Structure formats: C-alpha cells, structure tokens
Amino acid sequence: MLRVVVLGAAAGGGVPQWNCGCPVCRTARTEHPELRSTQASIAVSADGDHWFLVNASPDLRQQLIATPQLHPRAGKLRHSPISGVILTNGEIDAVAGLLSMREGSPFTIYAHAKVLSILKANSIFNVLGEKNVRRQPIEVDRAFEPTLPDGTPSGIEILPFAVPGKSAWYLEGNTHPGGGVGEGDTLGLRVSDKASARYFYFLAACAEVTDDLRSRLAGAPLIFFDGTVWRDDELIAAGLGNKTGQGMGHIAMSGDTGAIAALADLDIGRKIFLHINNSNPALLRASPERKIAERAGWQIPADGTEIML
Ligand SMILES: [Zn+2]
Image (cartoon, rainbow, N blue to C red):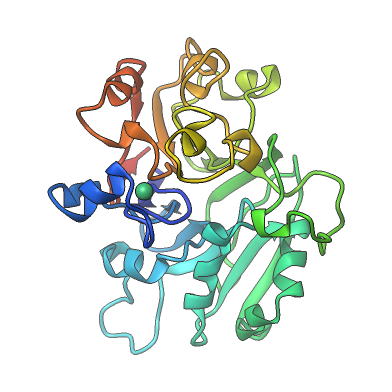
C-alpha cells in the first residue's frame, strides 16, 4: 500500500503570500483561514514508517509540525522518519526546505544532475554535509528505488520523466550551473508500490499536455497535477505581475488547451491539483471556477490530506 500526505498544495508564496493583497490572500487572512495553504510538497511511504518527500518547500518546518507521521519516533532523542527527498525541479519552493533539514539526521537527496548542479553552485546547501546527506543523481526514463538510511530498499519505485517546462525562475538570464540545454529541469514522477503495483503520478510543474503525456497518464488511479493558474494571463489581468503562466512554465487549468480539457476522458481515477497560486480563483470554494473544476472531477486538497492507495 502507498500512503501519501499532501503537506502543502500552494504554489510559490503560499496562501496568503506575505506581500499580497489579492482577494484570495485577503480572504485567507481574515474570514476564511481554511484557505491558508503551504507551498507544494507531498510525503509518500510504502510501510507507514519510512517516508520520502517529493520536494522540500520553504514551509517544510511548519508542515512537519502539522504531520504526526513525520515526527521523531517516541523514545528516540534524535530521529526522523524521513529517509529521502526527491526533487522534481530547482525552484525555490521545491528546494529551500532542504535548509530546514540540517542538524545531522541522515537522508538522501534524489535529483537530476541539472538540479544537483544548482545545489552545488549555492554553497549554503553545504550545510547538508556529505557525511549524513547523500546526493544521488536520477535520470530521465530510468526507474530507481530509493533506500532507507541503512541501505534497505524502500519498496517504492520511482520513474522520473521529462515534462515540458522551464528552468528555475531565478536562473532566467543567468548561466545555468548545469548547462543551458537538455532536459532535467522539470520532471514528472511515476511513484509505485513494488508489492501491490499501485501507483500515482506527480507533476507539480507542466507547461503543456502533449499526446505523449496523455497516453502516459491514461488510466492512472491518481494524479497530482500543476494547478498554478486558472488562466494564462491571470497575474497580469489582476495587476499582480507581468508573467503569464506559460512564461513561468505552467499550463492553465482552464481553456481549450488547459489541464482540465487536456486531461478529460482519460479514465483517471482521482485528479488533484497541486501547486496552486494564490491568484487562482478556483481556490475560493464558492467561485464559478471552483465549480467548473469540481464538475470536471478535479479536487483542490487541504494541507494534510492523506490518501491510501
Ligand atoms: Zn494573493
């Protein structure tokens, strides 16, 4: 069996974002605190005792406090059930939480060489010393089984694959430490339980649903999918910024080529949006956008939602 906990469902900045006065952020600060959401990350386990994070958000410390499954076991002075972190990209909302995982507990970081090169180029990540924190390169289209700190296989198989996307925003206009060309900056993951063969897909960033991706996701029991913006020009239209969803490497939920339309009729068991920006009106439970998404079979999860698969 696979157990998955949604640690956070929001895009970079979270809900509410520290400097944002948009309708969603204002509502989340005041009459609807249930709208508050931390930045996107999930935890997954095959045995319920050892857990792997998919991405480490800047809100990780708060997420760990709120998630009893990830607390140190009773009676142990120093311990964490977290055996590893799988990174799907190098954005701040995916890697900054690693800095909260210093203090000497052993775990492994699994990431594509391009993302590992970003960690290597930023000396602040040296706080995670080689003695305790292994950095394991992963490759596109090559499945791997993450291990527990003592080397025991986890029982989880992960297949990374390339997804249309962009390299991290803060690298725009700068030299990529891992080289400017080639895939690896944006990965999707197929995560499966080796014993039961149950599986799900995780795509926190995806700029386009290609035919290839449609065939891959068809029939999946569960997907977590990029829900950053409702419409491509949402930030511009709301006066919040000058970036489009596409400009940030994210497909919109709505529209003819949006995620809802592109992933309809694929016999997917459960569809969950993740990495939802605070500008996205689908976050508001009574909004017409939310109703459209829900009618199409999509869910917007609350932080802490646990799924057994
Ligand atoms: Zn906002």
